[in-house]
Length: 480
Image (tube, rainbow, N blue to C red; front, side, top):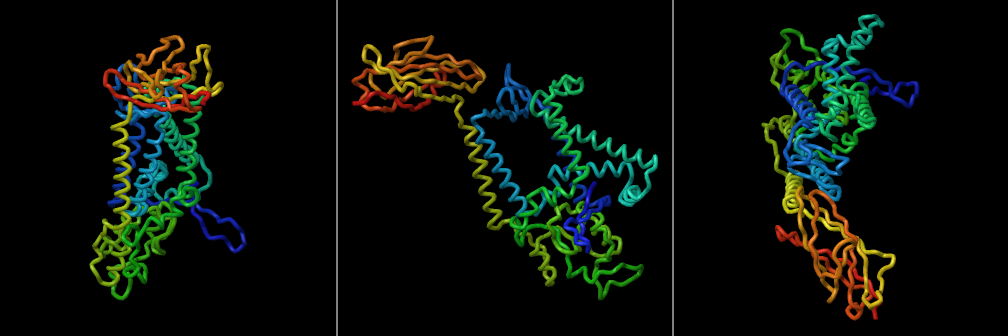
């Protein structure tokens, strides 16, 4: 179940005891509204994106976002990535990492509190509990209650809801690896492969376990980000802060009581009750704080009730908090500073580099493999022959005609197994979206091969567009 770490007992046990956390519902507030909108938006995109279509021409997949394992291709709308272009994935991961650092420098753990899939699905699972049982007190009472038919039914409904959401998560994941419409039909008619059902079970199972039972334990013990988050912050980063100078000494508020000579914190513990990780932000920023801001909404609601200014708990920088504590305005947010400028420049460089590479990348790839057994053969007429495996990848979805010739050794001619022989150049037809493999021999006069290794240049020209691709290999000979 959802658990909170407690301090080890005096018995000397090396393991912390755990209790279930039942976060209280925040009915209104800026951060609660933002979490709802982002949660439903992210879930809608994740589940509906596989059904988006993109016309790539006849014979091409029409799914806008697709990882085609069988076709060894990745598609993202108009972008098509081949296996040998895995460096684009590296660039994307690097861009994502820098973006996370940039977000942290600006607004602390805003990713964890609003966008992380663990947070999104945990919020949804807690909402299912709330729909079935009620808010915090009702859920706590149900946990303490003896096992009756009513309790069993409510628990069963909750588990059924969690399993349904987890199954939907697993199904949505596998839809990115095949035609979504056909896969949906196959899945629900039990015609999908064992592999498909296995991945649904794995992804859905982790969703069920992590969002339903582990919850904040993922943030505390499994996610590495909480361990190094402090390195991402500085005095200008927006984080959850309790204004101790204003709140202490805390005490319960009685009707008609003056707040002179005491702090504004009424010790209602609402900030603790609404926290999804169960921490008390009044004790300072802690590793378990995910920056969701729900304690800010809860505290502002209580300040409104007792007629005190909002902001006792705020989403603000340490600089502003200290400024207000010293009697200053405390309303200056410094967005432009060394680390944010550096992160912005890195993002621009990486993004521009990837965009430039995508915009100028070749639509033809060549791979040459020189035969090594034997390195060369001397024919009966004295000419030296080298063998090659020559592969042409046509990355567009239409047939193309290429012209191939070799330079670098005077008098060298080519011969293709099953094709032309003793020619200095030849035309080759390559089907669209395919690799053509040629068994190629190059013959050169003995007197022109003066070294044991000579550079041989293959020039491949796409005849319609005139684009040229040069590839260098070696030509082996006896030498002199």
